[in-house]
Length: 236
Image (cartoon, one colour):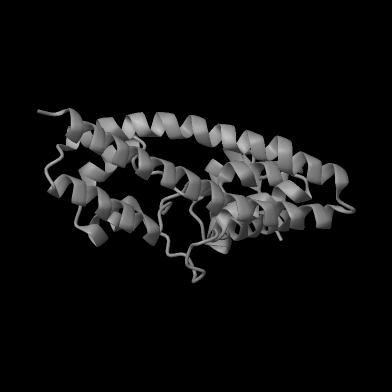
């Protein structure tokens, strides 16, 4: 089968702009050309179906690009899939994808405020696309709303978010580096097969993520309590 660009878009349920965006990102092979007409074939249909499947599983376009050109080995693909799906401690029900507008509607928070929170790192998208948030973000937004309702000015809350994001970004990158050096790489070197390496990597990731989150959350709560006690002890 041969398709013009609009026919391919209709066949695969995407817009022409999306097709051209994928092609610009190197996700789609170049079409054959007959004069000024670009012709697409079944390999493009298969590639688009593959991209749609990976996006539905939560893969980012950057991950998909590396996967399609063979840059991810079996272990890295398994890790990417584990990070894209439900994480330990999350609801195992199908993830409800939400846009920033959906979050505003579900929480009653101003869309303008949420856009500012996203820019400052207070809201972190789970992936790319138009619906990068989930119901877990609803709880986070409501927690932020509680701080505003208690009297914390929005400008101060966003300033705190900037400082917290800078600190946590560095900690998160360091933690990922430790995982790569001391967990992933040794598993690669000792596993009997690629399949076994993939299984061990995903199991290790699922054990370490909640553990790391618990350590960081516990430490921050204790730091908050210590700072509050210190303020009470020092204030006249």
